[in-house]
Length: 110
Image (spheres, rainbow, N blue to C red):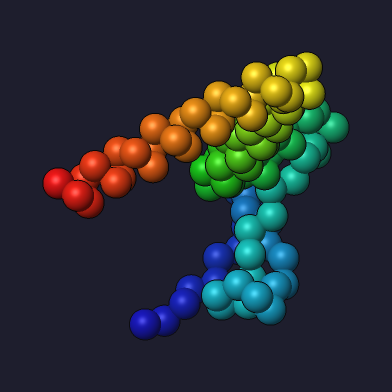
């Protein structure tokens, strides 16, 4: 299969593709998404997403960050409960363990 080289200098600005030499990508080139066009206007889609194909990774990273925040807040709230009343926490935990152990023993003995 023959790769044709296309001269891009006659294309309108929206149709141009910017390439950068890259040893990690397939073929040795990767597409670059500029932040500004020739008139100096910001291309917000490229600033935020870095191109459309990066949307999946951005959503994944945002969900990961929100997941960490949720887990941190949940664990902090649990620790505040323990610190405020450690005896109640230990007694409820021990009672739960006692119920679980009795349930296991009843199942084993039949």
